[in-house]
Length: 71
View 1: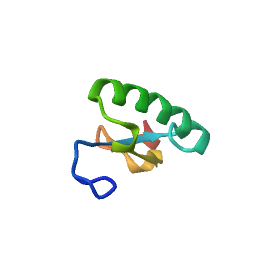
View 2 (view 1 turned 135 degrees about the vertical axis):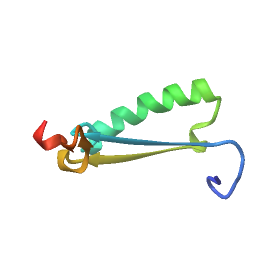
View 3 (view 1 turned 45 degrees about the vertical axis):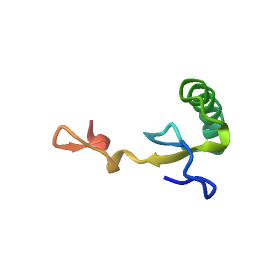
View 4 (view 1 turned 90 degrees about the vertical axis):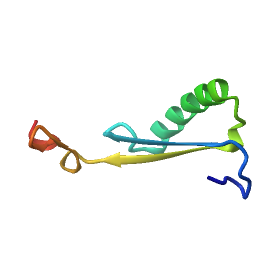
């Protein structure tokens, strides 16, 4: 993976959740916490990390032979 045109060590985190990653304010707070953890644990600069947030609806997640809407 390359970030900013460089193949130096980097990381990408994908976060998917029902009702938790839906607003800019929520994602800003989540992002700050994830970046704090990832920069410390992986010893990467913030410019080498990307986080992708995907809000999900309950009908998009299958579980126990149905979807989360009905659980």
